[in-house]
Amino acid sequence: MLKSSCTELPNPGHVLAVLDRLEKCWHMEENPPHLRHEEPLDGLILTVLSQNTNDKNRDRGYVNLRKLFPSWESVATASSEDIREAIRVAGLSDVKSKRILEILEQIYKAFGAYSLKSLREKSSEEAKFFLLHLPGVGAKTTACVLLFDLGFPSFPVDTHISRFSKRVGWVKERCKPEEIGAVMEQVVPENRYLGGHVNIITHGRNVCLARTPRCSQCSVADLCVFAGKLKDNK
Image (tube, rainbow, N blue to C red; front, side):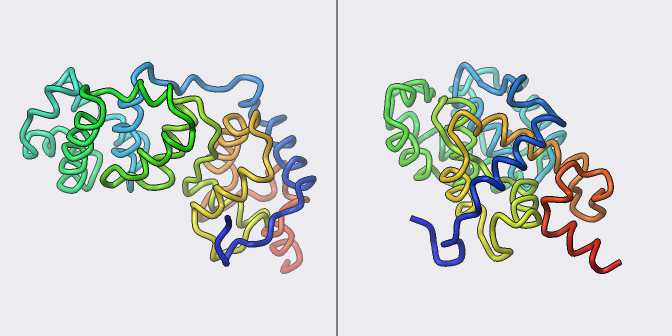
């Protein structure tokens, strides 16, 4: 159930019209990126490293970690200090190194192995419940692992999707990411979650920029509340 700040759903026709325009621009529904990890734990730790940093630094931190510790068992037996140095480039290394060790400990206790493959045999709600109760794993990280690595329907909301959803008029400015995700999951068809998610992110990185949005180049400007206000103020 949606929280009080996001009780109103956007017009489904408007949402689909915007998604259709974005698909014509970026084609991520027709040609979805391969984001699935054979071992879902890989995707989980990668997403944990992505918190409060950019993709480049996240990837560098992950590569450094796996070079030093090729298996998750070797990570689990490493010191927090060694892990911290390996992932330093990803930022917040003190916090993230401790979280990684705590996550690995809980996963081993639950499954007897450093693996999340068994979550694919659970229901989506069971998998979601387990992930949300891991240290430092919130709604966005959970949704990413569910969608990309476990194959369950979910709509992750990062800064790009949050910004775009508010600007285009789907949700109110005060809506939180987890609330936006709940909205999207109600109005977007499940088979469009992955491609729609990546289309919006791609649009956010290239057109709907945080500081200087390129509204004059935007394929959905005529459907966007934010762009309409800019036009009216000129």
